[in-house]
Each structure stands twice: as structure tokens, then as C-alpha cells.
Length: 322
Image (cartoon, rainbow, N blue to C red):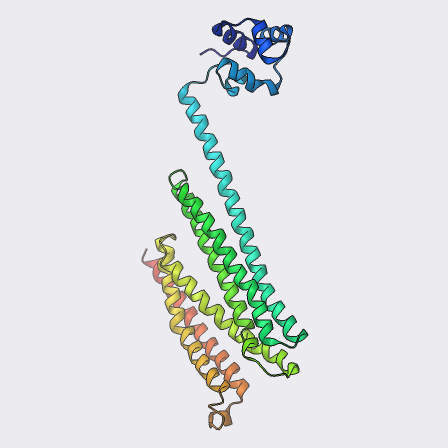
């Protein structure tokens, strides 16, 4: 179809409808001269009148602005383009919301230990401080699972419209956000857990001891939750096969190196805290601090070297057998 000006197109539509300029003017609430100036090209319709003109002539606003009828096939392409833009906008909005929820989760996980220490030393109630500090952690877990559920529901409802790769990428973002906030909350829980079991009134001795023991328990909680997260990631179909294979190897080598040391240290630390080694000849050779700090650190350093060598060997093997 030959493209014409807006005025010529409006005039052709009016004539096709069998309307006079006066009929159009009365319907739109404008003067007869105004309609005439539109059709001669002397002026253009006000943008606010375009929907009313389009409805009167049975066309779209896009067709009015183009000055021609849009073929059905081209109209479908326009609709598809608009739908893709809407989906892209919704996807970006959900990603931003998920990122914001992750930041809020981190903030709540940090707030828990702060409240615990304030109440433990300000009100001299360590157990109460633990339960108060636990509330932000529970709120963070509930919030991130709620946001991830909403995001997953949106993915399910638009599964057939989104591209497969874009859908999987967003699902991976949901997986990572949920896992990272849970790891942060688990670490914070480990840091404040000592306040639940410390019932002494000696607050002067609580602060350095709570920092030491809390840091150790927090590190253990972090490693345990991280191991669970990596295990789920290594066997999740959301991630590429090559990534999962590499992750499984690194995970199991880490468990077989660092895991052995950490389990042995945890058992030894528990025994020392319960005073079962009070008269043991081991403590005659090593101090309590050395037994629970320096020996595990040396063992961890040795395992780190072993782990690093295993990773280098695996990388070399993969590089030469691809």
C-alpha cells in the first residue's frame, strides 16, 4: 500500500465511512475548520484526540501516525516485539528485586549479631540477646524464600514465552540468592550461638570468649552451609554439565582434605570444653589454646597445600584430555 500523509489518510477514512467533515467535527467536539485543516495537512490532530479518531475510523493510533494500514503480518511482528520488550522489562525488574532482597538479607544477617551483643552486655542477658538476635535471621530467611517463591512462580507462568537460556539464567540467579542469604544467616547464627549456652554473670570474661568461640563456631557453620550449598549446586540441572563436573570434584576433594581436619578439630574442641581431657597427658604437652587453635591451623595449612595440588593436577588433566 502506498504511504500517504496523515491528512490524506484521515480524509480517505472519512470518505470510506461515508461521513462529512461536520459529522467528524461533531463527534470529536472540534470545529469543521479544524477537521478541514487536518485533511489538507495545514495542521495535525492533537495527540489527545488520536485514540478517539482511531476509534471513529476503526484503525489503530500507529496506523494514523504512519498514514497507512498496517498489514496483519507486520502487525503481529509489532505485537511480538512489544511482548518481548514487556518480558525483558519484567525480567529486569524481577532481577533487581531479587538483588535488593539479597542485600536486605545480608543486612538482617548482620543485624542479628549486633543486637545480640548489645543486649548481652547492655542488659546482662546473654540468652535473651541470642533470641533477640535470632529474630532478624529468621526474618531474612523468610523474606528471601518469599521473594524467590514469587520469582519462581513468575518463571513458571512465563516459561513458554521466555527464551530457554534467559529462563535458566534467572533460575540460577534465584538459586544463588537463596543459597547466599542462607549461608550468611547460618554464619551469623553460629556467631551468636555461644550466648545461648553462656549463663555466667562474668560479663568481663564473656566478650573475648564470645568473640573467640563465636568466630570458631561461625566459621564451622559457614563451611558446613557452604558445603551443602555447593553440593546442591553440583547436582542441580540448572547449571552446565561441565561446571557441575568440576564443582563435584572440587567439593569432594575439599571434603576429603579440609573436612577430615575440621571434624577432628570439632571433636577435640568438644572434648576440651566438657573437661574430659582435664588430667590428660596431652594437655601437659600442649596448652588448651594451642590444642584448639594452632594445631588445627597447621593441619588446615597442610590440607590447603594438598587441596591446591589436587586442583592443579585436575586442571592439567582436563586441559590435556579435552
